Image (cartoon, rainbow over all chains, first blue to last red; front, side, top):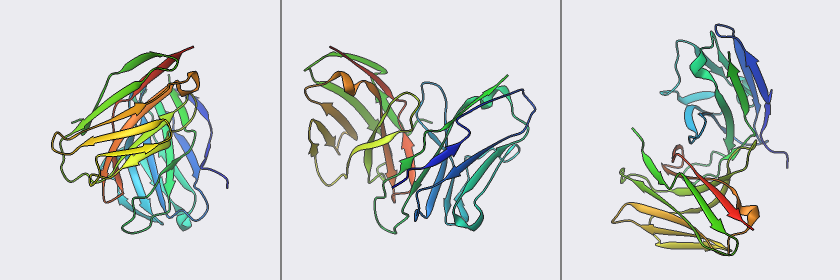
Length: 116
Length: 111
């Protein structure tokens, strides 16, 4: 079974530039998460999707961050414009999304973003 | 506000020794407590998890001890091996959806 796929693995941009990250979850997984992991910290949730619906985006900085999950499969996270403080690893995770079940999250390898 | 507090930040253990990582939480609504292992350049991977209705769960060399009254839980790695060298995160969630992670513990096992 293929795992969660993310691309690109690394991205270096100058501040004020836009950037986009792509995630392909495990086949059949209905729930998709985007996390941000700062250096030396644990992952922090940005947004959670149930199929194509964003059910928790309370931690997403909506002035510059946007996300979409068309057709309830792949997802894209965008930052425009990027700021120096956005440098971090952006992790995508997916889970089966079964109601009432303690669902295991499977993480992708992440995209390491460096904003200069 | 850090929902889950983890310690120590780093840990060095001799091969064959016991590694112990501790976590504490405040929100009594949490009902699922997983531990994740992360190697450099990789995403976190689920290691072991526990629910608050049990006080201990063991899988191979890995054991979670859970103290509901103290709102604390810990990971014990028995017979630690150099291959266990990684960063470990505790987490807590309710409803199986919103997960809150600790700040991580960098474990180094010396041969």
